[in-house]
Length: 65
Image 1 (tube, rainbow, N blue to C red):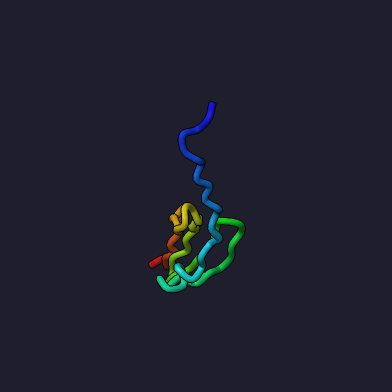
Image 2 (image 1 turned 135 degrees about the horizontal axis):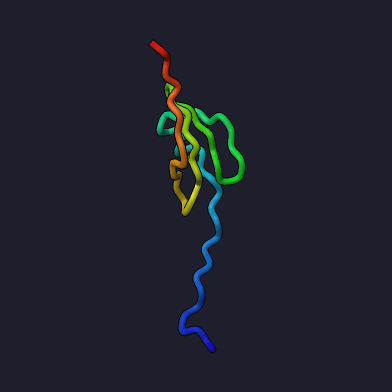
């Protein structure tokens, strides 16, 4: 079977940490496509997918009253 059109191969992009920094996030650590970042009292895990950051999980560090 011969395809009618060639397959489009899109090379994976490298995580762009500057996008997070411009949004006010401080990078804590990263591994592969995952990144832990801080902003204020919030800690968030992001995943770099399809050329953009996606929020995976978050934790707010509240102070007990």
